[in-house]
Image (cartoon, rainbow, N blue to C red; front, side):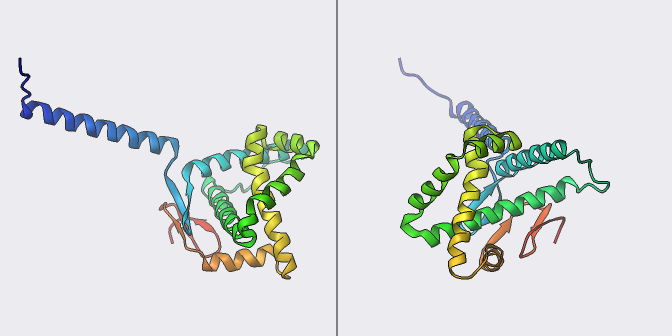
Length: 197
């Protein structure tokens, strides 16, 4: 017995099912933050990175407040201003990462792992850092220690050339192709600002 499908009834259902799956996938991506909020040269800064770094910064700030008995300032910065600062730091981290790779060339992984291993041997630093940032060992290494190590490597390379990391960053920001994909923020050539350009 031959099965006959009525195209007038079958295709619209298949198309509807396809679009339902597509919209669900897009919704999941947006909900999880897997969409770019900025581009730094050929690299992306994802919304989930911004959210995660905001959480880490908030935990760190609260830990410092508690440790030193500090009170909230009378004029607290807005959430948008804080996000702009965090987004600026993520862009700077990306520029530093690219700079370290250029400076070290094929030796990047060896230099990075060697410098990271030195830091990982300091158990007190690890425990204090994990407590201060409220992170697990792996998260602390990935989110805090690795960017710090990359900055240290680049800074030591720049020192040999009688330059500073601040000067290098200022110069890199001027040359870099940086775009922000949010109407709430803009890149002013040096940092991210909240609001419209």
